[in-house]
Image 1 (cartoon, one colour):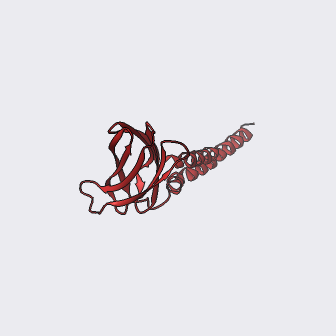
Image 2: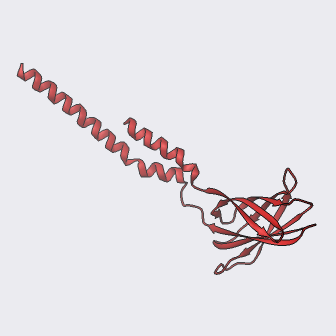
Image 3: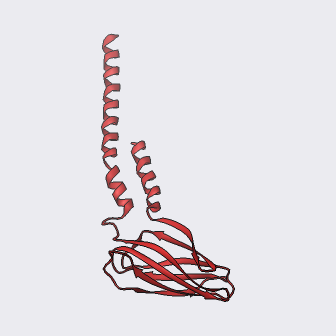
Length: 167
């Protein structure tokens, strides 16, 4: 029984790791644009991208979400807010349909202009939360553990009865 409880607890601990966070660097002309994001993103939700521009010498950032090949949609706006330090920005975009998207980040500053093309996959959210799926999937182990506990108790009783009859 303890093993089943331990397995369920382990599954619940692993569940938050479902949406992986990734950080990638892209060349945008004379700039290097580093983007931290969740992959894949949920359709229809406002998604935040942490963007860092190097060198940060007064560079400005503009972003737009462009549908990729085979994605039947129109470009979507992306809001850009300055981050807490020079060269840091928070880009928020919403991807209205499932499919391949490109977050185009245009950078302009003293060093020149450039565009970083960040590939994004927009996927529909799961039908049930991941932690609930793991819990349901591992629930038969509780029954197996209970069955084994009953069998062990029965075997102990039989041994005690056999010892009593032998003496």
